[in-house]
Length: 194
Image (cartoon, rainbow, N blue to C red; front, side, top):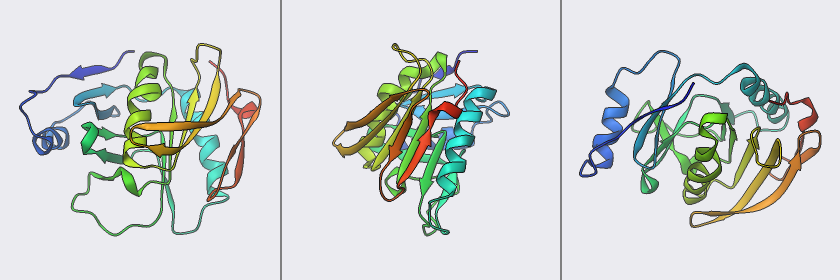
């Protein structure tokens, strides 16, 4: 199943776009994001997609401080990129309440994780990569099940502007190291492939 996009009026302000995103009744169980100013409604991720996210989450829980959280449905805002994104996983240290219950500033995150779906892999590879870098999220792990060279995991870091530096890329079956503050190895051999 493909994602549905809802165009918005280019004259519409960021606040109006967010209000529309917050107040609209979206299909139950769908993932609703604003990607480069376009509201995108995707079906819930498939089983294998969720298995990969769960296995990464399990490893991360073993190394993060008690007051940090790993969230699967937390929206993070990147207004400068017209983005309200919902990573497959986002690691966030404890934070004070924000002005809204619907999202937090993306800059609070320490790590974003995306697992590609066939229909919207470009968002994870291009749009979200640029948005997370722009927000200054220190680390971005892209698990690309549909990569042109087969399934891979790529860790990005050292964000500058809208660009990350690729730190490491492995094929499924190999381990990828996530550096401090995590200092953890993710074994991709436990990921189901396509």
